[in-house]
Length: 207
Image (cartoon, rainbow, N blue to C red):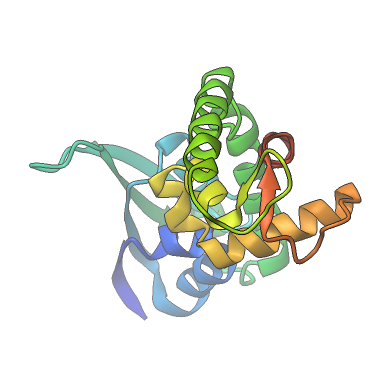
């Protein structure tokens, strides 16, 4: 077992892949010695990161420090975890319990701290959608339902660069297909286009 485990970006990826519970439980049970230190370097906001790592089931004391890197505009976070005295020894953490905790934290974060659909974002999306429709109307492209854009173009308009990194186009297409199916859209689940009202409803549901 190691006295020091340094995580530079692994937890960030695991959160995106919905695999953070397994990662943290493995670190806690199989990598870290009872008196070891787990250090996470992340570009996640501390308001998300610290609650994720503070899961009672993991039994860690969490200390957060902001880190400014030369030439990087976004501030990084450094979290240092040690096993709390009350958690010394004992049983390994329950991955299902940790998973439920992380899911609740992430859901709350995107709903309250970083919603996908804000008034400003809706205004920008409406303007971008109108411009894209005007541009496509000048092209000799295949007929589409009125007011619809190809799914790839909708993905680029609806999500920021960072969000597109977390939700690639193929996964977005599958997610939208499931959403349209739940909404009873006739074109679901294999829809190749998306309307503005559907796009706004999709973003609202993610919030």
